[in-house]
Length: 323
Image 1 (cartoon, rainbow, N blue to C red):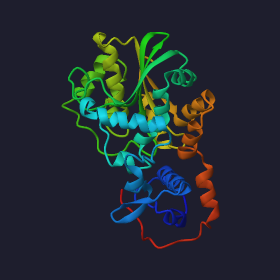
Image 2: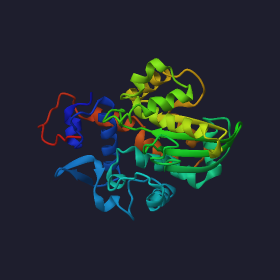
Image 3: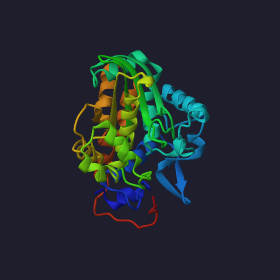
Image 4: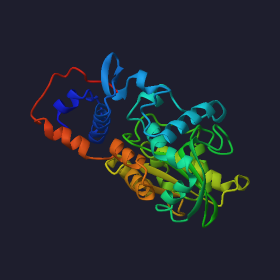
């Protein structure tokens, strides 16, 4: 655990944070301080993992690390009334910890340069021959009975030409999240019925899949499977990917448990942000992959802060935030 004094001094002691969430929140606060960006407020008190609105909203967009990331997020927001994408503002602007800005920071430059996207992503998925498009908060049909009748969407959606033809990778990106929260309605067993038609799951695991922490993975995977089942959609192959940092052990555990529920096919993968960022670093000499690594993954930022303050030092509980 990170010493309370460190959390308090950077305004990031939040009730309910698990150890990884503490570390990720502190990391974001330290990055903000390193760049001399003012902290935003939560319930009237500074919250270190939040930006002040004046530097967060357009045109500043200081939550975003590169011009392509800023361009892609603004494009997605402009298209949201048409696409139905759930891009919550001001959270999209001010929340440093949110995985949505992370999606644009990592995949925005790839969406703007599809040759770079191909070079980068083929290191992870060697069947990629040419990336054709990258979308954000993408769904083939929200609330559409042809799919899963809910608002499930992929945080990042990659369309590509591959070894098996017209293919896709639908990605759910997590950073600090632990796959907990409020479960989705079962819709009178509809999700189980969809899952049975896919023959991808061990039926004895449906109670596990219907509950958290596996449910969100399951619903997104079902969406990918429905896309593959619909011949009119024109997909020859597709994969659903859960992408998370190495340090997020709860996501890693959920991914292992989820894999145990599968009985066939290669339509689900668990991958790490760390390997994806490293692939980008190998694919380009541009600075943005290093900036993404520093912003989200470099352990030195937090380790230095911990080592600088005696762990025994304690401060007042003032500044404790609820989630």
